[in-house]
Structure formats: structure tokens, C-alpha cells
Image (cartoon, each protein chain N blue to C red):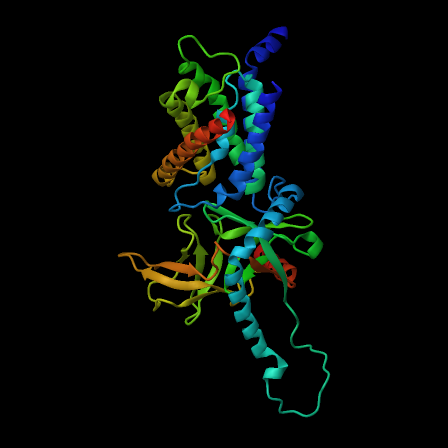
Length: 276
Length: 171
């Protein structure tokens, strides 16, 4: 027994290295499990608040761009305001709407930290469980998809960016409704790939790529981006399509977190059906 | 003793702030991510006991991970680098050995020695880091290019920082 302690003491440097290294690897693996909340992430209070202060300063630099996007969205919303419509009816009816029920709710949030230069990119937003944010909610901007909420703390949440090697978003082409998936190959922050589009489909440069209604995360018809270039390699049944994301990930500051109110219902039903 | 402690604590804080606020936003051609925070591990006194070296590298890596959402990645790479440091130092030590409390600087050991010492350790660190990040060997050479380019860039920053820090000390 004594010999064991002497042995450990003599090689304490190697043993301490192995101990610390295995802890690091444990963190790494635990954090890679999608959906399991990692505890070392920028959603924690200390680094979250620090980065919040930093982004308070740096967001001034992208203010012009942010203003343009917000102004464009305001114009879009103004179009739908009752004042922009000419009223034909004279009487006003109050109805209990049983035809339309709200499915998605939107929360405005601000990006306090982000990366674009990694293989796996993340963002941190200044909204958390106190504001009703839950894992698996969608994150979008008026001009495009951003990502999916991963970890949530009281005041912050982290988001898996579309620029993440494991990210896969169901997508369709706007003018012919063929669907595929948008993935990222990890190299260029301004291009993502649209895969699984069969070779007989007619494509045009500049076609808009939208989200589909298949996932319970994103609402249908959110812009992902536009087709930048496409190519049909000899012998392939599927196109190689490069899509330019609508969101500029380098300057994104204001985003919406989208919750699906009917998500549980749809998922439970689909689980029951797939068991049969 | 107190002076060495204070200098290293200040260096620790400064490097974390510099790394998180400035270097993490640097993207040159999509291939170069400098990680100057390893400068802290390079500049610890040469006779720092092994266990303290490992623990300090662990804390440094963990602090960087905290800000980058990369749990364990930087921790693992830094601890690995700290583990390699004593072996490398014994390989390239001068004939009469190191003085007590000496620090690896260009002024003391010359630019060639410093390039070997910092270059090898940075390469080991970046190698571990980038392959942990991608976690597969499928795009081996593209990742290797990132490792080499980023290491060269970090090494350049380390040499520049050495000159900057030492002028401050003389004043």
C-alpha cells in the first residue's frame, strides 16, 4: 500500500495531468450532447453580464445596418396597419375568432456575444427563462434564419448558429416548393449548402430559400437565403447548391426568438404515430 | 515573490480580456484564429512546480472556455501544453541549467531559443485545439493548414508582446 502512494507521489505530475485532462474531456463530451445543458457556457451570469456590457458598447458600430433592417421591417408592418386599408364596411362586428388560433409568439432579443470564425459557431442572447425562453426555440431576424436555442439560464440563452457543423435546417425553394436541407460545411461564413434537391428541378440564380413546415422549430416561410450558385456534377442525382444566408452573421444584433405554442401537441402526435 | 505573483496575475487578466474582446473577433481569410492567451503559460517562471503549472493552465483554459462556449476545448489544449513544457525545457536547457526564478525571455536566451521554445509549444497547443474543435480526421489537411497558419500568427504576436512587455519593465 505504501508503495502505491510513493509511486503516485513520485509521478504526481503525470497523474495530475491525467486528472485535469480527463475533466476537460468530460466537459467536452458532455457539452457536445445536444440538448444537455452544459454548465460552462456564456449563458452563466458572470461572463454573460461581462459580454452584455461589451456588446452595449460595440453594438453602436453596427447601428446603421440595424436601423436599416428595422426601418424596412417597420415599412412592411405599416402596410398591414388598419390605417393603410380602405374600409368598405360600415358596421363593426366583434367576433370570437375560432378559425385562427395563434401558433407562434415572438420575443425581441439582442445578441450579446457571437462567433463566425469557428467550425461550430454560437451566439448568446440577453433573454432567458425569466422571459419564457426554452431550449429548441427558433431564432430569426427580419431578413433570415439565425439558429436554434440550446442552453437557457435565467437571463441569457445560447444559440447554435446556422453556421454550425451539426446544424441542419429543413428548407424549400420558394417558386417550386421542392424541399431539401440547409447545412454548413464549416469553411465560409457567407455561404451555406442546400442539399437533397433532385436533378430534374429547374433552378435559377437568386431563387429564395425558405423554411418548411416540417420541423416544429421554425415557422413556415422564413427566409433562409438566396441561391448564389448551383451545379450538377456528372453522375449525381442531386444538385450542389450554394446559398447566401439572408442574415449577415458578422453584424447581427437584433433578433427574434420564436416559440411554437403547438409544438408539444405536434411532437406527441408524431411520436405516437411513429411507434405504430 | 510578490512582484512575480502580481505580474502574472495582471498578465492573466489582461490576456483574457485581450483574447475575448479583440482576438476572438479577428478572422483573417477564415483560417487564422490567433490564441495569444498561451503567452501566460509560456511566461510562467521556468522553475514553477509542475502541479502549479498544470493547475494554472487549467484555470486559464477554463476561463477562455467560459467566454467562448467551447467547454473543455481550450482547457484540454492548455493542460496538454503545460504538460509538455517541462520536458521541452529540459531538452533545450543551456549547458549550465536555468537560474532560479528565471523567465523565458528573448533578452535572456536569444531570439533563436525563444522561437524554438514558443514555436513548439504553440504548435502543440494549436494542434490539440483545432483537432478537438473539428473532432474528426476527415478534413485533416484543411485543419492542418489552420493549425500551421494560426500558430505562425500566434508566435508572431508572442514575439511582439515580449518586446512590448520588456520595454515597459525597463522604464
